Image (cartoon, rainbow, N blue to C red; front, side, top):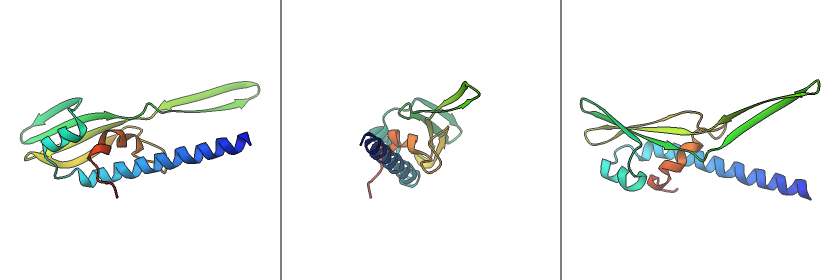
Length: 128
């Protein structure tokens, strides 16, 4: 009975990660064309800004602090590795509106790429 509960919880969490990955993917298209004011309203102030000529880049940090750990046992000894998942979102502005959305970092798993980016962009995305 306990194993069934663990399996059910794992499936639920995986479903949430897949849904967040879809939100992040939708944001790549939906944020393009938004004004600086619209971005400030739904994402808040950026962590940093950079400008070159007529182009400006706003950067946001996103993620829930997920740490992925793996390990192996061999000959009585254990070795393990852990890594943190996060997303750095760069919004490129040209002529006062978003022209590109770029994600950097270990943003998710194989079928959940970008899911860590959803936390920052979620309020800007229209739900399907």
